Image (cartoon, rainbow, N blue to C red; front, side):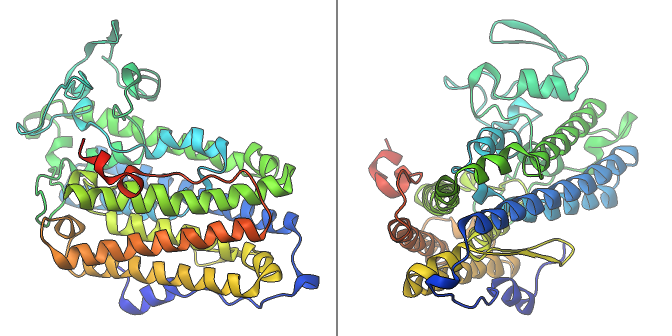
Length: 425
């Protein structure tokens, strides 16, 4: 995989320059919301196009399993994550997105539901009796008291029967992370460097097959990738010219601006700073990594942060290098309180610098797993730099809510930030 150089990373961190406006020159809210919807559409279109490229790479892997085709499929998965992570800021404030998101990015998952796992894997638990079901090796199963015919692994079987089986959230059978597990396998390195090491022979035929059931594993990977593409097509349509998500945002201007700020604040605070970063550090647990099988968590964190910055500045750089931009929330805030807008942009830059430092360290050989290790002061410093930046920018988002005289804005919380003692209970 090719990673960004320091120069390229600096370009990613650089915020586009916008001229401040006075109250008379403030953009109208409808224009700001149009930009917001356009950025959402572009982000999901990029997610879809890169998922289709992933689908092609998966088909090539299945057709001709080799070190090269497995590496190409992994690379395609990694590329597909960058635009998708920038769309996560559209959750929380937009129920249409939040209700859909679990189809594509639910996490963490009990991977033993899907395929073989190591002997050290915990297996069935009181919370999840299907945590080691291994549907790839189990053509007939009983789930929630019902006999399930899994002799053919299809998108419908995964979506309608396996995903969240028996109402258990960690029974994640679809989406990016299920595909990630099928491409990398478990990461058994703990807080040492290294990702999962699934061999390409897990997709081989005949006597070359490792792990057993290679044909069914290929069927599962193909079906899960098909589902990902169709799910992203759904969200592209939702943000299109006549889409439901776009219509909901534009219907009520104040509610639309509230959705923007709710997404920014909730992703910054409870979701990313809390559940995705602080919690893993408190537990010193690499299983709490967002992209744990591939060791791609540093990029997930970076592009989540970038998505928040995109929404505030009204600018998104597409995978082809073109830019979608327009009237911005930044300009709207500047027209009310120029100093507050400057504060928000400065804090976004500070957060992106901190997340960029995590990214550069990981790409330089200091894996995110290692940063989570007990007593690793450098790792804790890097992660907490990101956590503190995200928390700090959320405080300014709260001030923006007040400056724009909005009501009904509530941000997602996290025990790791709000009630740390509860994490260990």
